[in-house]
Image 1 (cartoon, rainbow, N blue to C red):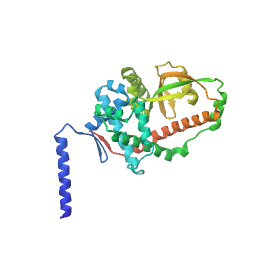
Image 2: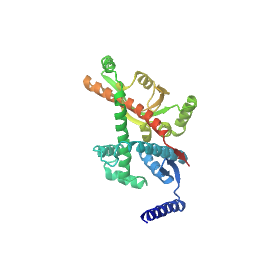
Image 3: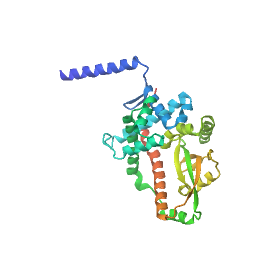
Image 4: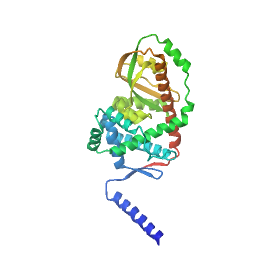
Length: 310
């Protein structure tokens, strides 16, 4: 008798959900195994991404919604991988600081201002944003655990680079990036042509949202200030040829490809503390390599999921 009652409750629940979708403007846009993404979810994500990159509002509605949909697909895949290893209900001690960094980056004074902005834009609540940030933080922790021992840094080469830099003044670049790869059976030249055409049509930041596979994509490709000393010779050489507000040609990075845009340039007196310089360079190089491992691993696990777009 109890089993029959339970089955009846399940049937009523499923019937109610079916009626909800039938009698509203909400419909299922994507299924990822047993998870769904609705058109309502995609609109919320689009509003959030516009907060992170206001220029996204200039993109055609269909393209902006596609960017939001892909962002949600990637997030759900990451979450499904993470729950195999982590307890997502546990607190992360530094989550509040990351949240503070986020709204400070948006030139907001406090969390209340951020909460009000989210409400006005009809997007996520503060708790939902914290969940999204937690997924990214735990994903980075997963990548660190899996690949940190595979990071290769030639410390002697870095020391040599520091010793060879005689200039007391060095450039710092505020950079944006479009980091992309060639998919199987994809014509590389045609893809590069599409990306360059997109940059001309909708701008660099929106093109980063559309094409970039880096975590910086949600921010329009912005990666912030980087010292010239932390850059490879190849990238530094390309940037030397590039004016402020312009972007480099395509730079091959391993099996992937990179386009950089110089947003700003400033000069900085180089630190005389070689230990501090070395530490900064090692952190930068470690993060760079872990970023590559993250992209490789994500694409590897993503193919294990059944992703159906309606």
